[in-house]
Structure formats: structure tokens, C-alpha cells
Amino acid sequence: MSARSLPLATHELFHTRDLDEARAMVGHALAPHELRLGKHGTRFHTRMNGVALDRTGLYSIDYGGEVSIAADAWESCFLVMIPLVGAVEVSLGREQVMSTPRLGCVESPTECMSMRWLTGASHLVAWFDRWALEAHLGGLLGRELHRPLVFSLGMDLTRPLVRSWLSIVDMIRREAETDGDLLTRPLALEQLEGLLMTQLLLTQPSNYTPALSGEQPRTAPAAVNRAMELFEARAGEPLTVVNVAEAVGVGVRALQEGFRRHLETTPTAYLRDVRLERVRAELTACGPDTATIAEVARRWGFVHLGQFSRAYRERFGETPAETLTR
Image (cartoon, rainbow, N blue to C red; front, side, top):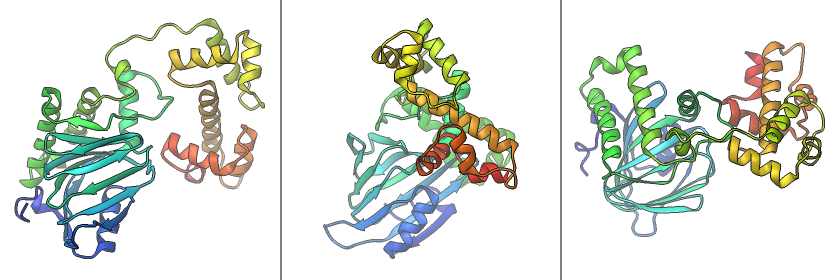
């Protein structure tokens, strides 16, 4: 694909033959990763165009040759890869696809990822802020999420529902390329991004598809409700799933199955989320001069501060220090 035909040409971000520069620039726009030249030839000339909006973004990229990309779970965003020409081998967690102009892919940020871009492959990439997309999902469901959103990797670009979603992507692309004022009007942009996120959530299969499809969860049994009340009332105490199961009169496996079936989570994860909410409330009410993060975390049952910090950032999209400072 020629430089002129790469979408969003009026919004060029960079072009370079330097591998380190390409890795840094693409990582800044999308997600941090490792970038290496492929085994077949050394041709390399990366071009990237794009526009960053409020909660989403749209980019086009061509490496000019074969490259290999790898990334650990990056947490910050979802990426929808829409091939224009060529092919890319994509592995995410246990899933693998060969992405082509008929099969895109949706990369969830909670799994390790690897890709092999074949020579001549060009992509349009839709970027979604993870916290914004999960908050939007929570709004559609009318409840907080108790587990991360994870999409299926492959996206069949020939499906009617997907083609409808692509038409929204294409409208954003045209607005950006023609400097239309739709993207500069805050209210219009909010509605447009909301539509883009809603259609993606309804179109691409995920672990929340049954809930979005209107499948009503069964009423949680009394034991699960009592366990939830116990977790809420005694979150700061050294609770275990074993003693909670005993307290509500069921076995550990029965309690775990009840939480999985009716709340889409586990007792341990539910208790962790309750404790994280208590920590956040306390950090928000305190100031840097009146409390330390370690003190508050330990008060609510978090012994390993490194694990606590990672869980806190995954849950709220910011570090405990950022909450305390604010």
C-alpha cells in the first residue's frame, strides 16, 4: 500500500526506518511492546497516521516489511485490528488467528500477545481506553463489573453486525480526513464514541455477551446472599472462603459455584473487590499527611503491597498514590 493510500494521511504521526523509534512511537500511541525485524529480509519503513479522541482513537499503520511483536498484558486499552491488505499471525492467550481483510482481531489487554506482520500488511486500528469501555459496559448492564472484560480474538469482518460497526469506524475516518467539525463538538463526540463502544460490545463476543443479550441471571440462593453480607460486614477481618462457607452452612465448592453462576465471579475475587472499594473510600477521604497507603491497605487485609497495587490499578485505572494525592 502506497503512502498516499494509507488512511488518515492528513494526520501523519511519523515515518521512520529506525526500529527503536518505531517501537517507541507505536507504543506511545497504542500499547508498549517489543518489536523485532522478521526473518525474511530486512526491509523496514514504518508509517503511522492517526487521531486520538477522548475515549477512543483511530490509527493506520504499515511496517513496510515483516516484523514480530510481543507484549505482556498491558492493561490500558483494547485494540481492534482491521486489516486493509496482507496478513498478520496473532496469538493472544490461548487463541490464535491469521488476520486478513476478512478476519480482524480484538485484542484484550489482560493476556500476553504476539504477532507476526507479514510483508505488505497494513492495518486500521481502533483504540479503546479500557477503563472507559468497561465503565460503558457497566452502564449498559446497570451494575459494576466484577471481572475484566475479555473479547473473543477473531472478528469476522463479513458479518452484517460487524459491517454496521465498521460503518461507524469509517464515518470517524472520513470526518478526520476531511477535518469535519463533528469530532470537535464535545457533545457530538461523546455520542459518537458511545455508539462506537455500544456496537462493539453488542457485536463482538465476550465474556459479558450473555448478560448483554438479555439472559436474566437466576436469583442468587440464600447462602450466596449471606456470604455477600458477611464479606461486606467483616471485610477488614482475616476471612477465608472456608470459614465463610462454614458460617453460611454450605461447602466450599457449592459456595464457589454459587458465586460463579449468579455473580460471574469467585468468593475470593468478590471479597478483594469489597476491600479495594473500602481502601479507595478511605484514601479519598484522607490526605497524604494523615495516612499512608501501606497502613490503609493492611487495615483492609492486603498483606502483599505489590499485588495490592496491581489489583488497585486494574480495578480503578489509577494507582493508590494518585487517589491519595487527589
